[in-house]
Length: 317
Image 1 (cartoon, one colour):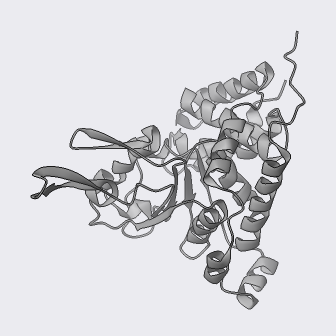
Image 2 (cartoon, rainbow, N blue to C red; image 1 turned 45 degrees about the horizontal axis):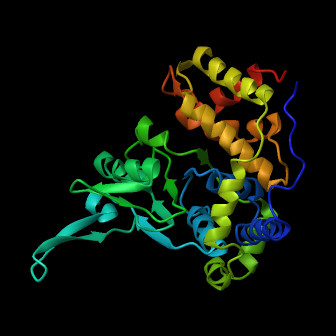
């Protein structure tokens, strides 16, 4: 017997309206990127982290600042450089001579939305300092664990790896990002509006929050209540299996990637006002979830092209 999905609304009407207003405001601040904005929201609501890869000047920082302003989240920006140390991110214990004890001084990672700008300009040791924070929502310094504020959301920007002064992110670090997106150049109409309109930074500074911290946490909890049918789970499993035997792929997708696909699909369904996820939700974000996790047999092969080929190879039953 098929599972019956409750038709009662998962979200109360005021919260649903606030979510719609938040998405609209981001689209007004980040012009011509409605798909990427939708995927960024899905990443946040799914409890994941977002990697934005593109050339400088295409709106990566604008997207992060617009999200923080619209969601009313505490925001910190860190510029990753070749001399950045892990303690510069996490914090450090300093001896207090008056109290005769070491006291922990928190680093910028103790925020709700962290923009790790140009993350691949930092050496691997510093990049890895974010691993525990992104996976466990805590950091350990001198053997003591320190919990991070909730929600905790990392948006990392990355320059293409063929630019000078970059360190490719290791696969273990890439796997911590639920999605990787590229913004690309704006369309002609959006670029014209940006050139002739108000400064984006001033608009973001004047933007009023449309959601609160409590709203974001409630939306994250609601994502878990979005139904994923057995047929949808079988479809995701089929994609995982195909990725492991697909021509040109040396290392396919892990079960964690499958969980990311399902959670992201649930988040998209919630944004669209549905109580159940569809194969179209999985398809809408498959390349962004899968490409950065695939390891091609030939280094020159495009991960995006491989992910798109895998998606085309698996039919929906």
